[in-house]
Image (cartoon, rainbow, N blue to C red; front, side, top):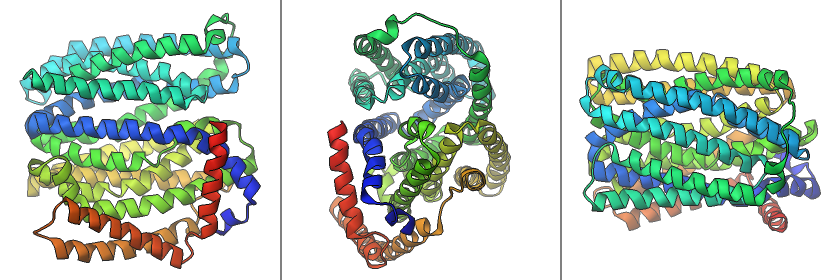
Length: 511
């Protein structure tokens, strides 16, 4: 904390205005993407029920794994090279067009392969009901990945306002479509995938129209030669990272699907969705990337000290809230049918601390050109994730049954992510002397413990007669206890509130 206070207000506001100017729209994007995504998942889960929801989740996981392959670092590469050449439309467009051609080729190949192997995949999981969802997810794979890639131009141009509009159209249209299909009694495991594909097509049309109107000079520019050697040198290690990330994020569901029936996959998806919603609020990858790419050494250090501390301030209490109130969140959002997601959610709650911190250090290393390091770290972590998932899921299933197999998948996920976070922090400390300081962790941790104890006993007090009002009161009192303790131990001061207020006011002027 002291390292933050040593910076003068002018320096802190300068950093904050650049970050918060876009973060105003980042917060809107978080609200749209995460609330929209959460609502879509909740409505889908309630409409389909656990078994069909599990089939949908497994089919989508296959598509998402291929999307991770198709990503292969293209988004980060696009953002980096277009950002670096922001003042040279010809060069920026040349990088975009070249990467787009490769991207479309890869997507076509992967989509065709998914269609050809859809029946084989369904047979592998001994579930014929998987065939049509996997077949339709080939369209999802192609168009979703294409939409995201084109939309990344908004990030490269630091135009989060447009990205928010894109996200609004995407989320609203797919939620509306899923309700329309439910009203028409078209209820199947394929239904949410079809709804999403239609909404993607609507969104792509909007993005193309907006980009051509807003950035006429960019699109009118002629194509010129680019430094392909530099491009591929940067891209190759991100590609390795992307292949590793697909093992990291999707092997749990795919391995789990081989051992348990679809409803248990639905329970795991429920737990992971709640955890992902919580930690995604604290992930600032796409905002930070272009800022860190051009930031000086001292500025990078200052940005890191500020953001890591504020990530800790929010991550620890959110984790505690999820652990204490996990059963109530599941019951309220997904219904009693999904209560078996309770124990996996408690374990996955720790990703709220691990993931945002890990992602920040990954972006820090990549933005400074150390993609080889992150590729190696994530590859080892991904292999570890596969091994742990096979061991934990198999033995937990063999000795304790499907419920514990789901818990085994959650434990494997957290352990592999923790390994990656520790090694990324260690590398950043060696290269930039930037690391997670003890002062960034200890005080938020202590305040969170006090909050957890308070909420634990209050929750016991209302057990058996809890309703939305009592749970809300528990939540409010818990947050109040956290803030009071944090202030008492000087984890945050009135100066920090004034700083935040001034930074927001300055950021509003830059919007």
